[in-house]
Image 1 (spheres, rainbow, N blue to C red):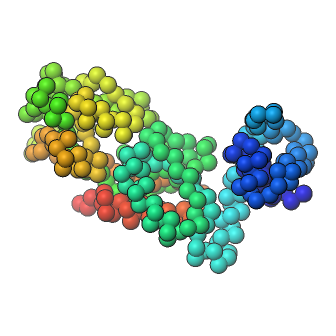
Image 2 (cartoon, rainbow, N blue to C red):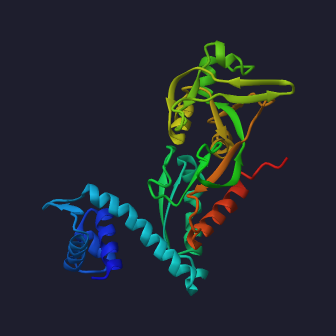
Image 3 (tube, rainbow, N blue to C red):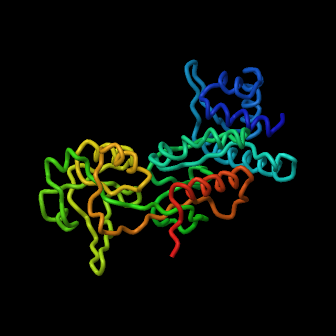
Length: 305
C-alpha cells in the first residue's frame, strides 16, 4: 500500500462523501479507492468511515485523521513545489475565507484574471462574515476588516476601508434627514445594526468634526451578521448605514443611497490578511497574498499619515 495514495483517497472520500465521486476526481477505479481506504484502516487499526448503501459518514477517529491528513498532504505539496520547477508556476489547493461583500464586489469579479495567471491553483473560498478558526478549520488564510484580536496569527495589513454614513431615500422620506450624529441616539431615527462576530453585538462608530468627537451607537430594529444582508436592509429603508466606499459608491451613483454627515470624518477600518504562525508560506499562498495586496491598492489603499 502506498500510504500517500491511501491518505489522498481517504481525504477525497470524506470531502466528496462518496467512493464513486472520489474515484472520479482521482481518476482511479472505485475498487482501487475502496481498497486503499480499507488498507489504511487495517494499518491504523481503527474504523475511519461508516458505510451504508446511501452515504458515507466519517467516524470520530476518521475526522481527527482527516484533519491531520489534509495538513500532511498540503505540506507534501508545498515541499514538492519549493524544490521543483513548479515553483515558477504555483499549484495546488488553497483554502481561504473572506467577507461576503468583499467577495461579491471585488474578489470574485477579479478571479478570472487570477485564474488566468495561476491556472493550477484550486481556490476553496469560504464567503462569510463569521470568525473563522484558522488553525482548527485548517484554513490557509483569512481576510478580515477591523483590528485582529487573535495575536497568535501572522497578519499583513493589506488595505484601509474608507467609511461614511448613508441612508436610503425611502428612509429619509419617512424619518427626515438628521443634521447631527447625536440625533441617532435620542430621536426617532434608527440605524441598521451589524453584529460583529467576535462580540456578537453592534459596536459604536467614532466620528470627528474639528474638535468634536462622538462614539455613535444608535438604536436599531434589525441587526445582522452578514455584510450583504446589512446593505440590503439599508437599501430597504430599515435604517441608517455605515459603509465602506466600495460597497456604497454604485448605490449612491444610482440614487439608491444618500450620504449623510459629510462634514464629519470616520476612522478608517483596517483590512488584514491573516494566516497560521510558524508555517511555511507556500508559493500558492504567497501569490494569493500578493494578488490581494494588488487588488486592495486599487480599491482600498492603505492610508498614509
